[in-house]
Length: 128
Image (cartoon, rainbow, N blue to C red; front, side, top):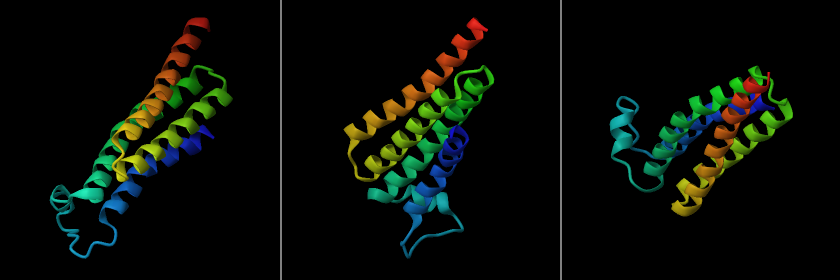
C-alpha cells in the first residue's frame, strides 16, 4: 500500500493544477504560470496547494523508501503512508475551502507521518 500512497501523492499536484485551471474560459496554455499568478480565490489556493504538494512529495517518497530499505515493518510504513495521503487530501480540501486552521492541522499530521518514517528508519539502522 505504501507504493500506492507514493503514486497518489505524486499525482496530487496534477489534480490541484486541474482544479485551478478547470472551467475557466480565459485560461492561457501558452503561458500558464503567468495566468495562474493572476488568479484569486479558489483558483489561487488550488495553485498554491499544487506547489505545496510538489514540495512535500520528495520528503515523503524518500521517507517511505528509507523506511522500507531499513526494514521498518511494512504494515507500519503502509499505515503512515496512507495517513499521509489522507492528511494531504484533507490539506487540499481545506485549502480550497479557505479553512486555514484545519489546513494547518492536517498539514501537521502529514508532516509528522513523514518525520515518523525517518525516525523509524534511523532507529532500525541503530538496531540492525
